[in-house]
Image 1 (spheres, rainbow, N blue to C red):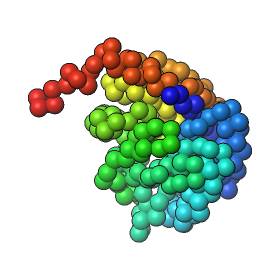
Image 2 (spheres, helix red, strand yellow):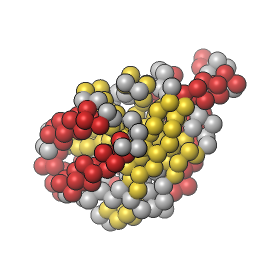
Image 3 (spheres, one colour):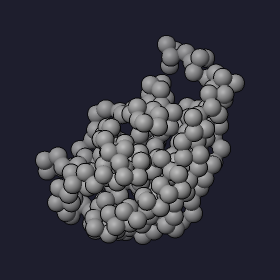
Length: 257
């Protein structure tokens, strides 16, 4: 089985839901016309980290999810990206998985980036998510989650074939981003589809560099620093063959870790 995956890298307009939605409405049909069946969006793509009115912006998420479901059905896509989910006086940073018109699952970001005060505005999630979608088993993590390999390993052990990573990962940590993404693919012998934001958002400068990586750690597609869509074909037989050639999972000694 093969899957045509894409990362839709763009400059998230902080606090401007309508502008961000307009971009997605144009981009999704464009990649679908190229045969894409999996589209990954950046972290907090609908609103950005607009802390001053985050709760107000979060109230629009329910309607946006409904529109994503309609778009996913219309274009026969699995769409993955995170948005603010209302939760009292805070919000969750939540991935919604739209699968051909069906909400297949949602994941609330577990690891909050305290360095930038994310833990002050957001509530943290308490469970991982593996979704058995129409195109295969997909695990999801969000941005800072990438620095915690235990989460990706759990998804791999549960059967993930692809890990999708919506992010807003800023300069100057480009090499950390690139190295950690390849490490998650290599150590778990699976595909990684990571979509970062780009451009100036608020006070931060985002480098883009969205990536699609195969189970050997080879980069199938990589973006530069500007708005773009990258795509690649994920061949599941390559993953099966590589795991048979180097059977890391069979050689694990979890009782000793």
